Length: 565
Ligand code: HEM
Image (cartoon, rainbow, N blue to C red):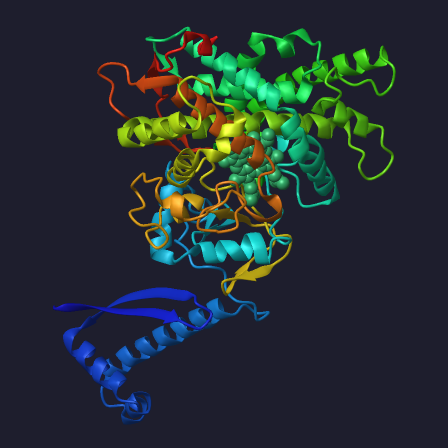
């Protein structure tokens, strides 16, 4: 028997801009199919068939089709409006019972989400267990979340690992949008990372970058791990800024950097790992993958380090007259934070919040910047013309008889464009940080329920040919003509997020990236070890890192050896 696949596809694209897609498949004989097609074409088909009552087969077929059409209409109406008249949830891939989309989710989620956006549109949903996730893949819809409805979408919905590691979301990164978060963030932006403070800490950055150059000079001709060098420099700058005055031997020693590197990469790994306990909260007590156990162990280590540094400071303060300041006439960040503990108003903070903030600074400040520097060096080394052009700019602005100073950075426009292009092609946080609405709301014509997890797929936007010509090409030129900033003003490009949860560390990160890269490329020429190929493969996680570490060989570039000392 010849069979036809009778397929009804419903694609409704209405004024709210959403697409409803449904598909039914059924089997009919040829004659049934022809008859049905004729009847459907005729506007009075239903009445004709029912009243004539001649052809039993046709009646059966029409009855089936009617049922199908009613089912489709019911499905459409159900999708269009729930019982309270709210718009439907966004479309999305079918989920398996209980586990949802979990078994289908691959390793490279940023790419998988981009592929799903091609099928379901720029906003789609999927379930992990019972947890609803909404992924946004277009600047227009991202704008609704981070600008127009920023206040509603300013919660984070941390995973168990993130919640535990952030001392119960008592830090800036993972806290919900509440008065504690507003207070802590204000403090972080205005006291810790204010322009004035960043300016005052200029000499720490200079010292550390110089030490790095000297260190690399001592290894000329041998192999160097760029990520390790960048991490060391960044952490030394951060610790100088945060607890310069500490007498705690461990926090000043070289073991500290190694310990912090281990902590930072473990924190990032634990937070990026899908955890069964997050997906099935009722099973959380079993901690099947041991994520909670590992996180608590790590937290214990972190807590011990911070407790020792804080106790050391409190003890040394008790020996000094009140309001004593460090030699340069300024308190370090730790002291600013400890002084706030004594406040009796809304600006007062707890010791736990101080520890949370310290961890934010150390982890968010080191891992991110290091990752960006490694990608930038990898791209620059693969594109020799770009390297030459950056080095020429450095010669013009700095000169070969000088070393890079922060005052040069504003003039290094091509290097700045190269860094932005690196952020575009290799966004350090490819899905930004999760947002979660504090109440049900409507985005792009769809209901986004309170408490779900909203992921902004920055990677997808940064690679979309709708917004970028030849998006896979590494081409800094595109940032010479277009003035994109790091404040998320244009949502085609927002590597530091946007809106009220915009990264408060961006000004420091910007300075450090420019300063470290300018110094590396001005003081040295770089090549790959013999026989090594350029490799740009990615390792998706909480941050998007290079899969293989960038190992390179420096050679002397400046004629005057004293510039390396
Ligand atoms: C390459 C460097 C960096 C990148 C790419 C980066 C990126 C981001 C992004 C995408 C967010 C989330 C923004 C949002 O939700 O809209 C964020 C938040 C944050 N970042 Fe950064 N960041 C970097 C460096 C830093 C540094 C150096 C610090 C501190 C020293 C820092 C501290 C923070 C904090 C505390 C938050 C949480 C803000 C909040 O939720 O209110 N980041 N960062």
